[in-house]
Length: 144
Image 1 (cartoon, rainbow, N blue to C red):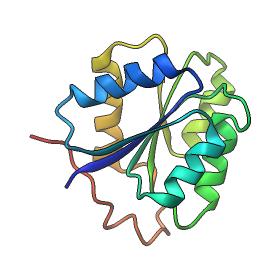
Image 2: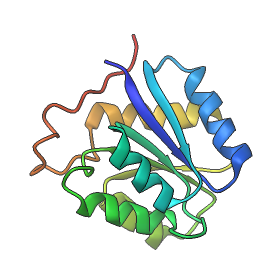
Image 3: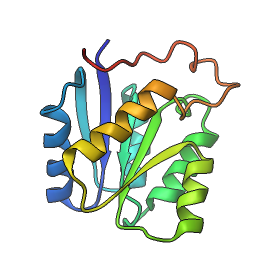
C-alpha cells in the first residue's frame, strides 16, 4: 500500500528538500502533501488520510509540539506516524516528543538518516497508541 505523507515546515525550501528525499527513496509514496505550520497540517490531515508526518518544531501559528499534542488527542488522526525533523537540541523536549510517539532526526540531516528513522517508525508503528482502532490496520509498508 502507498504511504500518504505530510511534510510540515515553515521553510518552503526545507519542505522541498524533505519532499525530494522522500520521492527519491524506496518508500511507496501515494500523496505527498506540504503544510507551513501545525494548523495547516491539522487541516490537511482532516481532508486526506495521512500515514506519516515529517514535522518541524519551530513554526509560526502552531508549532510542531502543539501540533503533535493535538494530533495524539484526536482519535481520528492519532494513528499517524511522526518523525520530527528539527534543529532542536533540548533533551527534555526531545524526550517529550518521544513520549508522544515521535521519532527524531536532527537538521541538517543526511537523506539516509531521515529514511532510517522513517523505516524504524513504520516497522514499529510507534505513533499508534495501543487503544487506537486504526493501529492494527495502519496501511503502511516500505517498498522492497
